[in-house]
Picture (cartoon, rainbow, N blue to C red):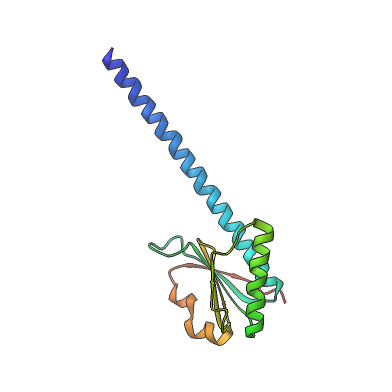
Length: 150
């Protein structure tokens, strides 16, 4: 009796592990889908206010990063940078119900960072973007360039 119980117990543990792995994979897929949709909505918010040179840096292949993606863009003036910030914030809130965790840099509006946890949005003035050159700094990342809407 104890032998058959041990076999049954091992089989049920194995079945439980398979179910757990499937649930984790599904959760991971759902998270990736949500991140992709969030990036899409962020990009739409940027384009709505004529943000230029949008680059998405996929950091998922790099270990120990603070987030999974950067969305990098630029505005031509401090007022345009702030307009892009407001547009992204409102667009994401309306379309996805997500709120930005933190925003930094609005005081001088040369480089504003918006933290959406797994995605950080960087909105620069052109000369500040050229100076910090995040795309070069994160050269290991897969970079995706989004064409300007002109």
